[in-house]
Image (cartoon, rainbow, N blue to C red; front, side):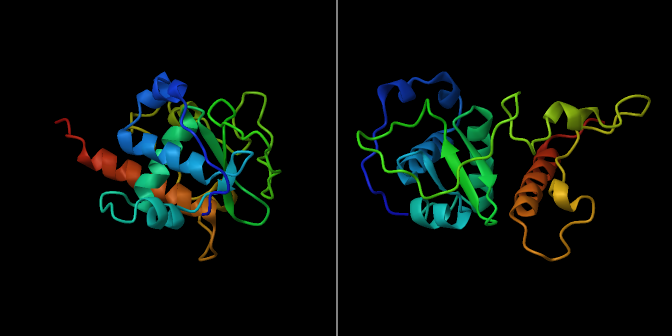
Length: 187
């Protein structure tokens, strides 16, 4: 992804408490995403391009780990991502983290969808809501796992049709399963 103008990392970003709590790899990804964004802070979100362009020689970074880092950045409000009507995934850097050049060029990319009054994306499913599923009157089943498919293709998937939302949901689900398996079991 070509950069049209120089981007600067400000001293305020170096001491931002939210960013500071993230891993060094996630903070580096935040810098990369800012560098690749246009003057309005938007760009395509393509994990293969990110891996090949910024992390090509890093064997420990995978497209899946990049997805998890993007989710971490979204949780602290650094950015938000969405799928536009063209079926491609995009992101926008939050204004508090995006420094616009003196003469910004209008973006050619689609604008993010409007936020809900709560500040969340209209398609977001709050974690608390997923954890409450089946909570009353049932035996504890352990932590709720994220869904394997997007909301449009629940419960049976997209039947082989490519769907970015389903891919992301599946990767998040698989990472959560691996994390659960890695935890020591109580006897």
